[in-house]
Length: 64
Image (cartoon, rainbow, N blue to C red; front, side, top):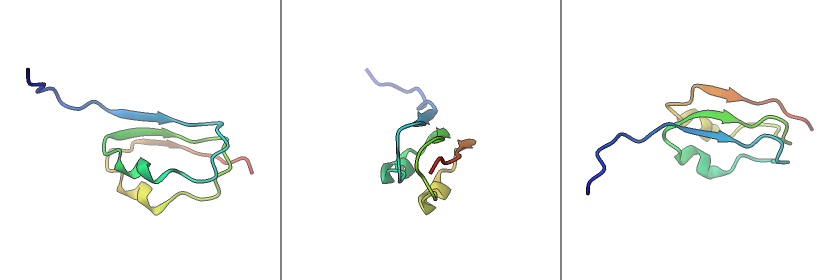
């Protein structure tokens, strides 16, 4: 059986996880539309975030 359906959207919720960096694999999630990364220890976002063509919502504020 062949699955001809289109891939669905992808959302990542990783708030309140003590993250100090965004894992590099995030840039490989081509269908990522929502990235919630608030309340972590992030001080910057990686350049690779700019490659996410379908990203529509990024929620980030850091608690250092």
